[in-house]
Length: 258
Ligand code: NAP
Image (cartoon, rainbow, N blue to C red):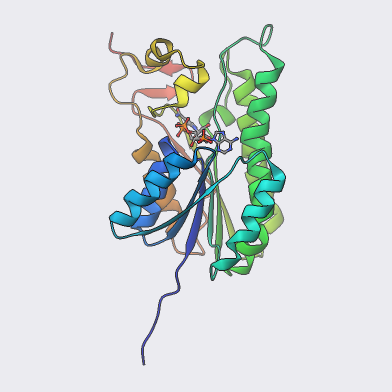
């Protein structure tokens, strides 16, 4: 008698850089067929080619997570796979470090749209398929910003609190169904674009975020925690995993060797 292992599919949003790209690489290496999504198609195509060249399996779909019609069309396109097993809601980020007194409401809206509504859109659209897989997993990349505030962080902190609450509530609502809901909350991670996006392309200012910090987390460090949580036995739900570099004791306590 021959046994076959069904191909399991993992969707990663924001797979064009940083944590999303590293997570896609690691889930592919763990045996998942990975579907890479982000707005920049050239970058996810290059990553899919790299993953395929390494002998793993990947596909791409350009997607803005804030565009619900596009998200619904993407979800419909996934019916070509035998199952949709894992969703990693990673697309997101921060804009600015302005105090509440002067923060731009447009920045707050963009952060809420991307980190919260984007996560809501993709989770809602894929949930029927993830549930139908019989052993599904939804991951939400929140942040330590979703757990404690800091000066200049209110817009991002508010948005990541939204993402955290979405994950916590979804876990309550889905109990009894075959879906795990996992929140990963990283602290300081040095990725190629996060701080540069936050400071609107000001690379000097972005570099100062990590200045003197001996070893901030890397995208690979966080991707390892995601992959570890996802690959636990299906009855094991890692509700929340907070991960920081050793040099960071809280959002406001960072050791710099200057
Ligand atoms: P990053 O390198 O800036 O990556 C952000 C990703 O999100 C990119 O792939 C970007 O792709 C995608 N994205 C942004 N807006 C999108 C949209 N509207 N639709 C679809 N994709 C969108 O940042 P990162 O450091 O890897 O962060 C990844 C996640 O971890 C974010 O949710 C971030 O908030 C969270 N996080 C980061 C840190 C940190 O210190 N770096 C700490 C805690 C949590 P496109 O531009 O190609 O669409």
